[in-house]
Length: 323
Image (cartoon, rainbow, N blue to C red; front, side, top):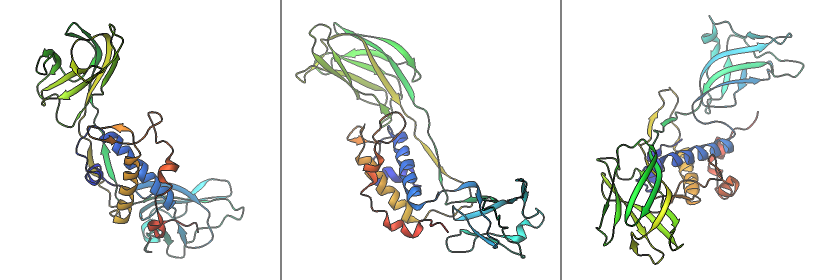
């Protein structure tokens, strides 16, 4: 309903680490607006069944309608038969001309036949909705493995590496040893996700913290802090798991359909809902919390709580009422 770039500009976000999650926020907000309006708003093909009422018009469920490709009726034996032969279809079927672009009309004396057993007996295949955004999410590159830190020396057992031949070394730039990862151009600004490492030292049983810190596109440091908040390299830990992800940007293209542009009223409401989800989130970013709150890998938590105080009345004129 809105592009990722529009949402990030609205929320003043520049990094790409959580673009995937922000895309899902847009999808959730779009779903909420569809639910409130009682119809799907973005361009899609539908095949739906209606009840004929011996009239020459039919109110379709989703709109604005941009194309109708098939109309069938169910005969007494239950078989679906073309209501209008293909050679006169385009001259008989009139696309909706009402303001909402919802009412399908038949010309030339044709009507949608009734079914006196009150079954739904008319099948319509059609295209409806506003122009949408096609989002392609590129997979990230990853480096995972196990660290052994002992006597100011780091050794690494890599488990998965699609980033490249990363060189591990040490430096005393901070007054004691830190550990460096080096690979030319491997760590572009704003595209690296590297969660901090929290571990218990095998010697003193105290909790230490390791944080990956960007120096350049080529070099990242792993710096260790002791419980007093001091940088240290005097630790002893074996098989400490770590993960580094390098994301590519998500690409977005406007669909090539002939669908009309989405009215601004929907975009503004979508941004408002996205901001609500954003503020409710718990994904970690470089400066503040990003994304959406997840109970499991797949979904939003307690969306009723998130959406309950959003005023949707501005969209009342766009709601589909059953006729």
